[in-house]
Amino acid sequence: MQIRRIIKMNKEKKIAKRKNLRNKIFLIAFISGMALLALNIYGLFVPLGNADIYSEQHTLYENDVDKNAQSLLNEVVNEQKITSREEYIKKVVLAVNKNIAHYWWNEGRVKYNLTIPIYKNYILWFKQFTDSRHYKFYEFCNYKRALKRKVGLCSQHAISVCGILEAKNIPCKIVALSGHVVAMAEVKTDKYWILDADYDVIIPYSIDEIEQNPSIIILYYKGKMLYSNYALHKNEKGENKNTFVNAISLDKMEDIFGAKGNFVINSVKEYCGDRYFLEEMSFYMIWIFALILILPFVVVNLLKI
Image (cartoon, rainbow, N blue to C red; front, side, top):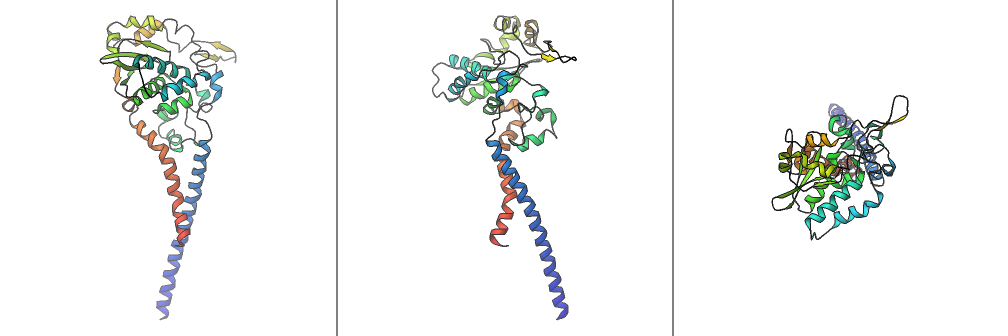
């Protein structure tokens, strides 16, 4: 009898130990989950964009974004009935041009959320440590998020244009050139326009037509290249200096549109690849994962297991 009692007591001690360890793990998970939940809730109240971009000096153009253009953006995004595809496409290009600044400098990486902040999406924030090439300076695949952040390169402009048009069932492709990225939309059956929202340029030809005669782009870019404010930076002495190191000349732009190295991607989803799905899923998973961590502790304490 005594041996049985000792065996029973040892068994109960082991069960109690396991339960105690389980409860500690559940408590740690609960605290972690609540912290993530609080982080997510905080992120809901913090804008993705920084209003300082409206006065930022290191953008492609002076006054590269216009705070008064938000109404135009709302109009094109919410438009229900498109009576003229050509006119609608023109409005989309202008709206994206005026709402996304060409800015991708390391100095503003945190200020302008080029790296996704931990309070906006801790999964995308963490990815910068495993894939810095894509996530340290993150380009949104979702046009709504890109337009809220209000900064990006030419490719972010192209993604945003195509994203808006695809949402309206207007076929749009992304054209990766040798040093530049633009969109290409179907204006009518078998008639495409090149859309460069970065420079607010519309070329009424397809990329195939332009590759046959790249000089035709000069007429449309002329004047757009002259006002670049792109490389205003401090030199070694701390003085402001316009270097225009990265500004693209008309001749260079003509070369970029040449056939060599260009390729066409059929959609935003195809252009972004795996990032497209990770981005969309992650904005749900940040909530689901937090709740998964919280749930065991709550269940155990409610049921007194």
